[in-house]
Image (cartoon, rainbow, N blue to C red):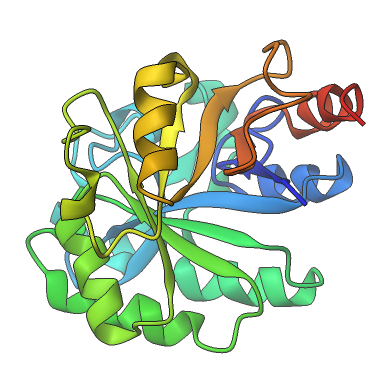
Length: 239
């Protein structure tokens, strides 16, 4: 069964990567949750997309410049007024605790760029995920997926592919079990390369209006969306 992952939670309805967005996703019937992990100055994995904190907190600092204690003082939101009533940044440990208390939905954990300077900390993430019933790791950065496989060869991984990916030689990404592609890459060139390699794909950036959602290729394993409810409805048209 293809699964619908709520992108940073149900971020079309609540501010991204917050408890509110995750709970909204479950309420809308999302099959799973996609979220992002960055590292603080003191090496604590936290749930936030941008390394530059300005867009989500209004603070002109990078996540790697602040300790967890300093990050705790910030609130995230779309503008300064909403940040006054906003929610704090969650740690990865808190996110896992929430997920386990919420019937353990499938999780897509995206490892972000701050891990590149401290790749040894990937081991923390893999260890924290041990025993979780349905989880996979994704990243734009292939070396981080290699680290995941070094820590746990059985962990599922997906490379977030771009036009710069070596589409003529996907076999070079042996530590990637599959690929995540933006819907802009939905074409014979890219889909054919993934299929020939015998890998799976998930597609992100979809909103439910795409004509290919009801009856996609067999190797498409799922969708990643800000609007899990509309994508779920679109899937039903093909059944």
